Length: 239
Image (cartoon, rainbow, N blue to C red; front, side, top):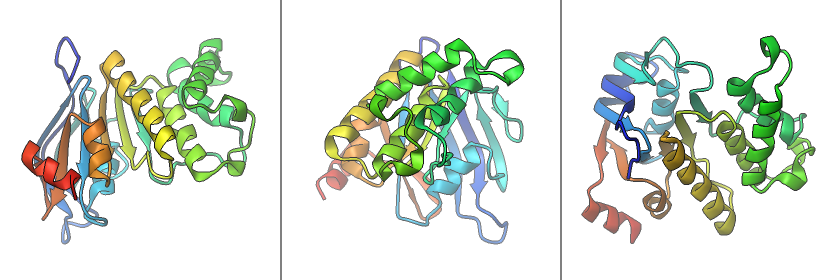
């Protein structure tokens, strides 16, 4: 359960309509509050709007209506640099660059160097620690393009953790991972959320996996976002 002493709301949506056209909205979220240390999983069929919702919270897609606040900043304003970590489905890695360089991009968001030109010692150290947590130390100088899909997902996760963000948005970040690696990665992210009082919103199609990670599972269905009650959750997990 959330561990924030203040129980502070880090992500808040009120009357939010998502989509790319007023004529064809994808979903309406009447209310959503995510607090310090809380992990929320969003499930639902493909193409129903889950990724669009994450992108809208991240400020990459403008809401068609309503109010979104992340770390106290209301869209279109963005949270302070480094406060929001985003792991997109397509990862957004620099494929020709090394694992270290990609993760350093994340750590510089919070631990940048002089005028942001040179990476600070703290940024480099945080990058190395995040790479180690993802079990990629032996690949630290390997170009990302030479890594497997699962390894690239771990690089993207390390890049986000290196920011020490207050909010993490993750879109299917556990896909392409074997069971043991998936367990290690999800445990690392959960531990980070608890220890740093960070809020996590993740998209996860696997209900069993979602139930092992999240405090609350929400399902996007028929244009709305609904909380899955414990009984319904058990039925979905057993399918």
